[in-house]
Image 1: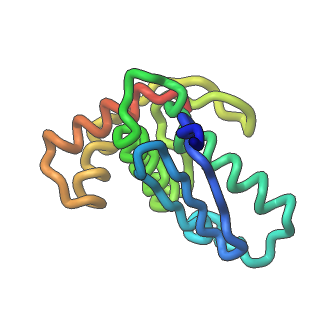
Image 2 (image 1 turned 30 degrees about the horizontal axis):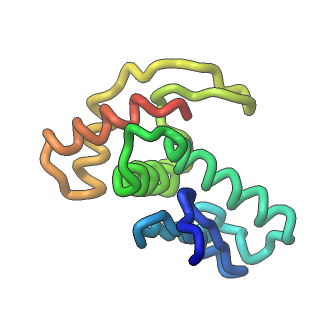
Length: 138
């Protein structure tokens, strides 16, 4: 009898369709060519590192057992769409290089408004999404 996986399994096509398959039959797909406009011109190493970065950042909470797989997928999708739309990381907590310092967002209202506009959501739902994004250490 095959052992059931307890982790997501990730695949990526040459066209940039990266899919994470989670235990229980859930999955998420990111079209990396929407984020990396020069995806078709990248070499194998560039594609690997670009895909790895998206997986790590968008699914950053995957190791946290307090979230369901669906929560993890939903949060990842919201972050990916934010990246595609705004061409930058959200101004919640940013860490790491590229001159980005750790800072807490002061303009949460504009983030809520952007979420409402992009996904056609009520303010209450958008505030919930923003609150979850604020918890991310991205």
